[in-house]
Length: 426
Image 1: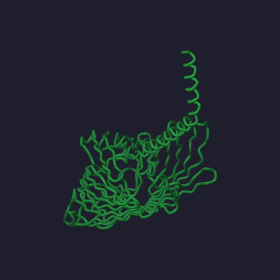
Image 2 (image 1 turned 120 degrees about the vertical axis):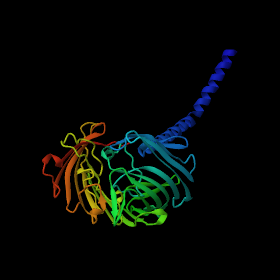
Image 3 (image 1 turned 60 degrees about the vertical axis):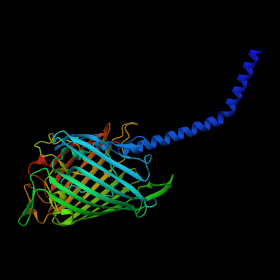
Image 4 (image 1 turned 90 degrees about the vertical axis):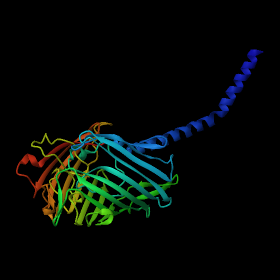
């Protein structure tokens, strides 16, 4: 009797399992799909430089870096995510430079005032370093690499303490805008004096307003899960930024204006090769200190031999132009890159050849204002050409560039830049 009862129970259990099997398979399929989405989202966040947690995404940019002024720079940073709130966010970082033995930090936050136009008001307080002569756009998307090639060799920094309030607003899917008002204390870490008349400034206060527009007229967008996502990255793209400095506002020392422009065009060919053209231009007028002028993206170390200058090639920098060699109050650069179809040696070994030409032109009106530092101007056309062979081993490759034309140097070796590249994507 016991055996019969057990047999009946086993039969009923087996029948129940068979009846439930389709649902089980469906549940498994749903689970696999969910896991796949979560994995894709995780890799997307990681590719953007974030390590997601429950309520806070760690910012990988601040883990470790190196430059000539700070030496090794390490710390932690991050921002709250949608699990914390989709209307409010808090962000910040704290880092330490071992060579200059100083902490740098930033604390900020924002709140959304309109969901349809993705309008946010952001506030921040930052005490950090910035490369002199660098210029960035407010609307630039976050760009992350495991290390920043140019950063390794930069030695000309100024310290800034900035309080800012900004408004980011989506005018349309194709047109993004951001406005920022800030008050800053600037202190160059090198020997520099900005001379205006009978006054000389080795540190100064600046109050500025910036307005930036990013227009992508040929990109395509779709609504997915209540979010607008880019389904086709169209070209050309245009970015424009206007900066105005106000004298005597919150103790600001100078009146000046800046206009920055960038356009990117990309052609994809039928043989899986592509050509990329990038044009960047900037114009600064009025009482603009060297910290806020332009350096044309140099990436070469001032050392005697080619092997001593062997380092990491940048993504959009002039590899044969020496750091602090040129500064301009108006400049333009043109970069041409042609990416050949990767050579399929094996399934995993697919190196890619890239041909590159870069050109720069600039000028400066009042060189005598900038005392304590010597530099040249780009009155004539600066030219360099070369090539890269990328992804030779574990994302590493090689780069070669040659400097020619008006700024060709007497010593042949000084015109050559031989470096390695690093390209990896998640």
